[in-house]
Amino acid sequence: SEPLVFVGSAKQGVEVPFREHAFALIKSDLPENVMLITFKHLPHEPARSFLIRVGHQYATGEHPELSLPVSIDLEGIVGADIVSCQEKTLSGNRNIEEWQQSRLDWNGHRVDATRPKCFKGDCSIELMPMEIRTFLIQVD
Image 1 (tube, one colour):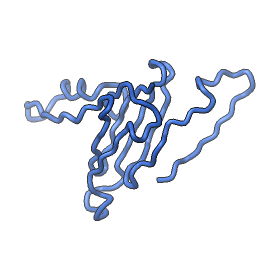
Image 2 (cartoon, rainbow, N blue to C red; image 1 turned 90 degrees about the horizontal axis):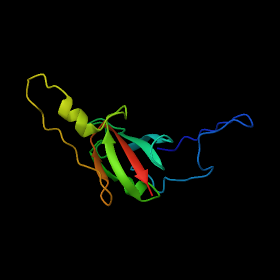
Image 3 (cartoon, rainbow, N blue to C red; image 1 turned 90 degrees about the vertical axis):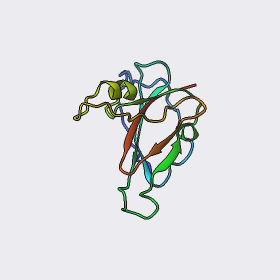
């Protein structure tokens, strides 16, 4: 989908929480059925940390091709080397592995719902139809 451009302003003398005035990080297009929901710089995390949330835009059976699972490479999209990449819960406040280990299953059994890990050199993920996934990345 087409990017949405937002412009903001601040009064003179007001500190704006941007470390760099011009910094382009998206270098390639996402697949047609994937939407970049969140791309937020996190100034309180280590330098150049970003919260990225991507979502599949189609439901199963909604389109013959676009509703299929899709693989995307986060490092191929980001215009810098990814130093670290952690999948987070949808809210972005907890590591997904930590959450999966602590969650309760209604049947009293643990469910092995592990997802592919995201490491430097291999940051490929698969999005299922209507799925949204959140990542904390640090770039070089």
